[in-house]
Length: 392
Image (cartoon, rainbow, N blue to C red; front, side):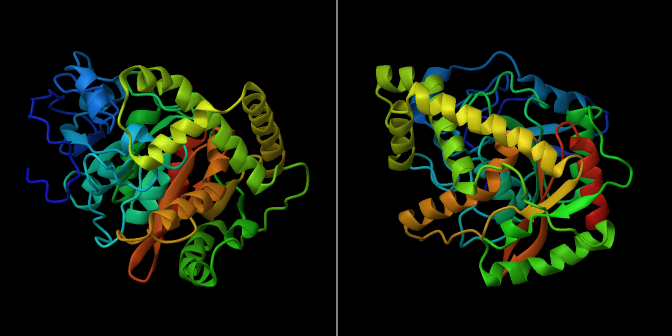
């Protein structure tokens, strides 16, 4: 396979056996280079991690599950360094191409997986999402993307970033395969949505967007209304933490847990890191016990209030505020985009609930996604609700 999108790590090809039959027979898939695949190293987007990896002898259970379902493995994809960025850029390995908007960044950290699918190099791809690393590139590259309920898909044999918020998810180009992969990975829902679920719109979250982005998303909302009916506004009554408080809680938890996962190795072996990633790790090293514990309390408050506020309904919200920045955008602007995006992305992260990006809109010729959030354990029924929307 010719990788003209720079989506894949250039590892020597090693045959990986898959079942000759199964629900995913005939489909190809790629794997973010955080998951172990027997016969390959796991590089994590950093040359030091790659050098220390060695060749893995065991395949991560989530990858093996797809192989057992008949899917064919075609390679390991680029990731932002240590999965600690959302731009898709990697100072060591470059930037995979956004297949839907080649002049724009692909988003990350699951950049190579989104690139591989959007450039038709495979049918679907595994990624991870801690703070938006599937949902952001899904919106930027015009793909279906799932961040599942926390713990729903196994992360055994996957490089850690933030234990209490890491999830494994995936990308596809079409709704039918999106549902099929979900059935293979998710199993039965613990808390399925009712056959005719209630829907609600996060109107205050759409109000955070520019007028141009809101206008671009209106046709997507009309498509959702064709299934959901009129969308009542989400009432923000109660003790819901502010967007900024939720974002800051996410930052402190992520920073502290990322340093706990990687700080010792970074310090001991003198990892050379890109400036943005180095800055985040340095910040995480300074997070105090008090800041971390306070942020965990904010997370618990948000979970309790969210359940009372949203309950068993499907919430409609923007995935990110805007289309992908241009490849030549100023790094400070990309960092500001990351910050603003997290104000929309942190709800599913902190509450541990599933979120799906639907590629239903465009602005200036580039994709712009809209999201559905469901209650914890409703992943598969949320996928089915998404399929009804896209079928309209």
